[in-house]
Image (cartoon, rainbow, N blue to C red; front, side, top):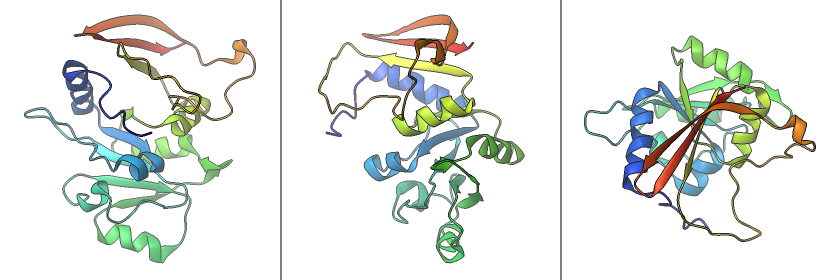
Length: 197
C-alpha cells in the first residue's frame, strides 16, 4: 500500500544514514522517486550527503521532485536512455547532470553507468532501489556487498513488495550468492551483511 515508510527502528535508520555519509553516491530507480519523493540525504549531525543517482530509463522524474528541486545544493545525476534534448535541458537548468546511458534490454546498462560515475569521481554507491533496480543490479554484476535490515514485523499479502523483482532465477544454482556473513543488532532490528561470492 505504500504505508510502510518506517519498518525498522531509529537505531537501524541511524545506521543507514551513517552508511549514506560514508558513500560517495546513493542510487535509486525512478519508481522510488515517483512513489516516495525522497530527499536521499544524510540526516546525521555533521554528515555528508552522497551524490544522488536516479536510474530513469525514459526520463520520467518529475521536475517537482525533491531531488531535482535541491540539485543545486546536492549533486544529482539522472541516468537515462532518453535523447530528447528539450527534456534533458529542463533538468540541466534545475542543476541536474544528465548521463546518457545505452540500454541493456528494457533498462539502462548499469555496467556502463558505473564507468561513467567512476569518471565523475563516484567510487562507492549505496543502492537503495526497489525490486526492479535491485534485480538489474544483481544481474549486471555491480553489487559487491549486501546489507539486509530485518525488523520483527510481518506484513504478508500476495501483492506485498519484494526487495528483488524481475524474472528472478529458475534454478537455485543460478542464485546470486554472497558469503562472509556479519550480523549487527540495532535495538529490535538486525542487519545482515554479506559480500559477493
